[in-house]
Length: 129
Image (tube, rainbow, N blue to C red):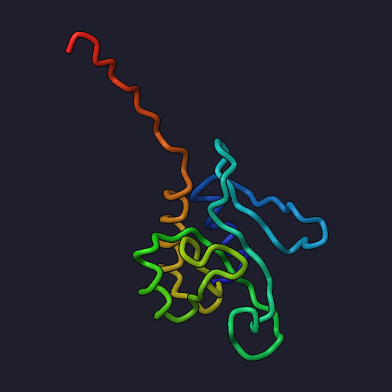
C-alpha cells in the first residue's frame, strides 16, 4: 500500500481528510475524529533509523492507537514497530509499504474505535430504592 492509497482509504472509510498541524513538517499528517478532534492516526515520513532499521532513507510510517494486549503480537509482524514519538504502550507504528495491507486496515479500524467519542450513559437516580 502507498501513502496516497492509505489516505484515500481513510477518506472513504472514515470521511476525514488529514490536517497538517506543524508548518515546519508539512509531510506529517494527522487524522482526527470530526466530533471530538482526537487523533486516530498520524502519518509521517521519517528516517528508517528512527525505527531501529539501518540507514537514513526516509519511509512513510503510520502511528495508530492500539490495544496494549495486541501490541506484542503486532511487533512480531513485518512492518510493525514500537511507536515512534508516541506512548509505546498505547500506540504502534507501521511502515506503510511493508505492513500487510489487511492487517494495517484492521489496526487502523481499532485505532478509530479506541479514540471514538465515548457514549455517556445517564445515571439512574436511586431515589426511593
